[in-house]
Image 1 (cartoon, rainbow, N blue to C red):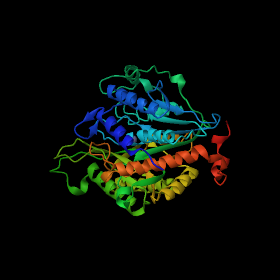
Image 2 (image 1 turned 135 degrees about the vertical axis):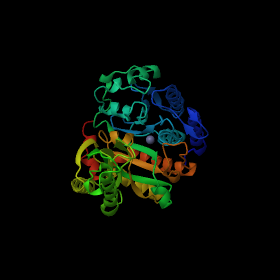
Image 3 (image 1 turned 90 degrees about the vertical axis):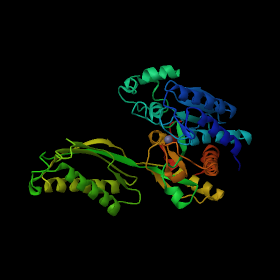
Image 4 (image 1 turned 180 degrees about the vertical axis):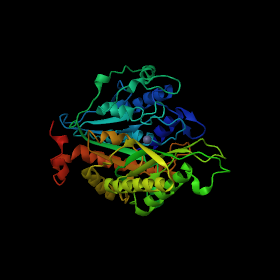
Amino acid sequence: MKINRGRLKRHLEELAEIGKIGETGVCRLAHSKEDRQGVDKVKGWMEDAGLTAGIDGFGNLIGRLEGLDQNKPILILGSHIDSQPYGGRFDGSVGALGAIEVIHTMKDNGIVPERSIEVICFSDEEGSRFNKGIFGVRALAGMLEEGELERKDKNGVTRRKALKEFGVDTDLTDSPVYMKGDIAAFLELHIEQGPVLEEKDKPVGIVSGISGPIWLTVTLEGFAGHAGSVPMTMRQDALVGAAEIIRKFNDLVKREGTDTTVGTVGSMQVFPNSRNIIAEKVEFTIDLRDIDLQARTKLERKLYQIIEETTSAYHLNYEMKEDTRSEPRYCADWIKEIMREEDEKLGFNSPTLMSGPFHDALIMSYISDYGMIFVRCEKGISHNPLEFAELDDIEKGVKLLYATALRICQGLDNMNFIPALKDSSAFDSK
Ligand SMILES: [Zn+2]
């Protein structure tokens, strides 16, 4: 099985020219002029591949290839082509253009799939411009929130206006577009954005699921005093308390976490933030993630214990605000099974790994079974113009995507060894 490597390379390079910054960076902010140029360019490639393509009212670019049996739940492939303001050439683009390459390869081989296939470039995955992302996919899945179109970018432009300038008329009553049961499977190819594949010296990985973060904001309150006069034994120093919590939290995750647990304190505010005043108030964030919900819950409880004990030892008051709590979303076993079989045929020997960052697939998981393939990227660098993935690795990822897509389109009805399929609600409604 062959994909057209030259064509894939050309598409990646041409898309990277749109919104190019410096030698290797891109800036294609959601709904911007550059985003629209990118969408138009990619729409043309969809049409070359034989897809009927259009842009919906939310800015999603959707191409469809009719299958032989139009009553079957469809297969969706896709990712995003918008970028961070100071982004790289591969984040999202690899999956979007890889999906088009899959369809093009089918066409080159004269294959008409049994079930219809859609390729989607989801709008505003990144969330940088309006401080809230995965917008297009949430619209498709019916997961938009109140006031979504009134969110403003840093220039005061609302999303509603930006979408209008992008060239679409947005009607919220169009959401959701898909219902549970419409979709047999969703597949997303993406660069790893982490260092695991590089460390394992493997070009491609099969994703087990997307881990769920807990985001907390912790505020400690002590008492301010003169750094020169208040004796050490009489202090209520909020910063010393915070430092101890952060170090103990880090130790806890290292010592008792699983291979997939990560814990981070990435932001801190100190009040009054003066060199000769004992810190009265410290606010810091906590990000705790794992694909293993039980493991995460166990560490969460221990974290609360640490906060409790430390604040008591330093005579501090504390408050805790929960900003986000997401559950991990697991890839479907039957899709991973197909991927493993195809991976073996291709001789890649790909490891299984989880995704720390979220992707469009996170939202798709609420309306469809899903699978993800990761491609190795240099040093795990992403959201940075230095982001880099080898064409060899991308090609391998697309091959695995192609083989998996073909299996799901063609032979699925005969695959009665997959128990999940038989009682999957996805197959009842149509
Ligand atoms: Zn991405």
